[in-house]
Length: 159
Image (tube, rainbow, N blue to C red):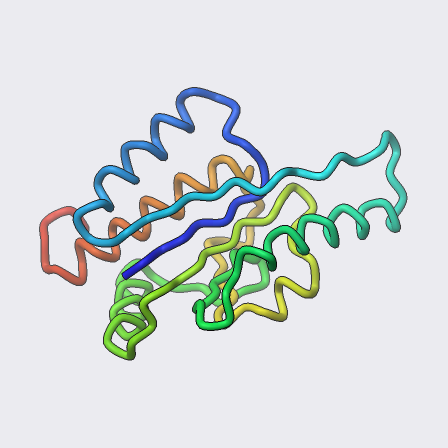
């Protein structure tokens, strides 16, 4: 399975980059992982709602340019569907069995996702009703993908 994580913004702190590198290494035995950073659009000081919409639209265009028609797209959204770790693992396994060989996870920027990106999603996934920094969310997502593969393969890790 090919898994792509499209994430708006760069990982600035070394500890986030180290965590992503660790989970990327671990995932290497289960899938082909690509993590692509999307340039974060700049907001003016004291942005208007129109400024915020323009930023989301620009980031959304950059995200959509990297998604192919055959990709199964999972967006991370507060209002999305919640899964337990086991349910996410079962969903990933069903995708694999049904021939969905390319899964794209999308993490928006600080303002969230454009409506166009959200509309493209095959699944809108929520990790919590709480808001997390998108840098942290990248690590949490990779950990849960790794946990899913461990569950699917009946390997010790998930308890």
